[in-house]
Length: 461
Image 1 (cartoon, rainbow, N blue to C red):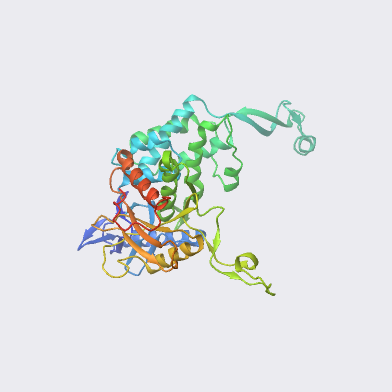
Image 2 (cartoon, rainbow, N blue to C red):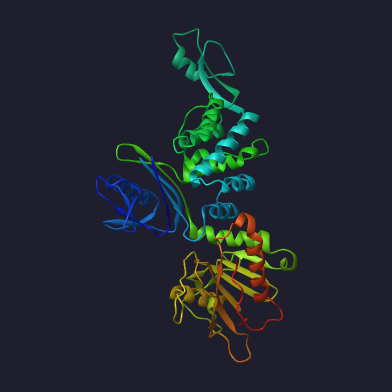
């Protein structure tokens, strides 16, 4: 099994039958012709079922997109990492955003180990599952039906007559049995079967094998969506909650697919657009909006504050027609983050893009991004509207664009372009990010500040 690690928006070139996957030459990264075809076949089959492709395909190369994580195809493991942050910070962002159902201390330990992302996650799952199963498996009463030589539970008359008309020594019965063959344990066993072939770490494989031994009396099944929905987490099984969420992540949302001779493939991928937005929202909510900023209210996706850009008028216009009061909503506006403090509002729109230090009127900022923030500023009435990007790793200054939404005597509105530095170790230096975000909020939502600040704000780091 060959392992390749690459970044977002990297090209994978198609080699020939003699090319070894992972070969680099002339600034290019090559895949063998076989692996290139397998990867494309898998991506297209996934897109058919889920409506999205992981890579952008051309005849001689493929380009990774904003998806990060792991793709397994027979003979090859591809790990896609963010372009502007190291692997350990990706673990931190996935933890804060809630994408990974593991405890902070487990992820923090794995962040200190230079191991592929999937190896780290499987190692946490293997250790936690074995520890919990060693304390005691989940047991429950399971309804059984069997043809036994004695009566146990209730005799099923109809089935008994159909099966045992000529067998007076047998009884078809239905009974409850207290055992470990529960739906939750069957899911854990299926997850162990799935991940044991995805890890090359011998310690992790031994842990998974030990868990499979403890689950010996549990049936081997392939869980379906309905099986996950039937699981209810309560006080008796809540210690397995995190493990169940990860097992579901592996088996359902990122289920293996079959193609080309029933060869199994696997992917565990995360959309960095969504991860970045949720990470900033959760970090603000739990780490920044405290103390002096505890009177701020944060609404992710502008929840309960939905606005619309255009409205369809009614067939008959009333004399006092107003689009918001009488029209039909047509185009919804959902700001990523809306923060209120008294009468003041701040709109933050997160953009997982690598902004370059370009010259010109927009200085590399997308036309569509500015138009989107203009619509937010107009509809939400926010004085400050922030486009928040990850820092690209080169010298780049925050920017301010004034908006023509204010008349004489009214407060000036603007769009500010800010950056968060995700290169430093967030497990050790998150306080810097916390202070910088707090400074931005205080300036934008200050009672005394009537116009946007024109002095350069420090980069958020």
